[in-house]
Picture 1 (cartoon, rainbow, N blue to C red):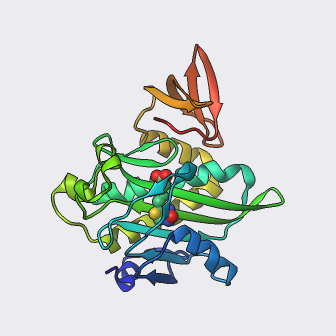
Picture 2 (picture 1 turned 120 degrees about the horizontal axis):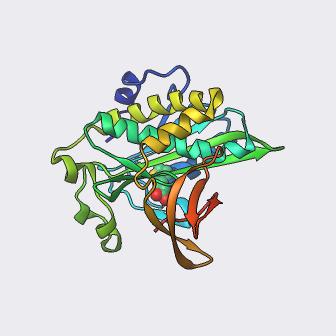
Length: 255
Ligand code: BTN
């Protein structure tokens, strides 16, 4: 059971997390966040569940959560940003998770754009979705999933080789409420950075990148191609060196 009171007592935010909606069971916290917004729930609301049954991931992937052991929550943010800030918003959310997990003694890195890795295995993922009106982002839902107190063996067979959990790394359980509160604290801070100067954020992301200046593979037109990950452009898009030429990509799936 997640105790929302415990999340709230660990928040140091001005705006985010003042209202927390807890559900025993939910298909997807992101889907619920968009529905709650329709009903008038506003900026800063957190949607959290102990059992997410149909978690959604990037590029139509799914997200597996072990009931009562993993973390799955979404945050409603109603700030206005230029429409080309979608990439930066997604990077900021990844940095927030890395910063908070590092504080809990788990050393993590980011695989572009915002997969959270530890010991070369996936520990967490972020699905950030935006609503754009007239070239302006008006609403954002940031959804965070982290594998916390379960073993790898509790997850479906087909993903076990590629993932890890906080329990497997540190050999002790973690208080999920503290992790959630730290991520929210960090997100408020980083979203403020985005509005002041996106460069701060780009540099923070690069400091935490798993594969900067390293060889990476990704799908281009359903074929796996290789390149050197050479940085980010000002929108947070991936700059990849291929055949002595730098190409920029806004949405690819690194293998
Ligand atoms: C990915 O790795 O592709 C992103 C996974 C994001 C999962 C989180 S769990 C909470 C929120 N609700 C969802 O349905 N998805 C995100």
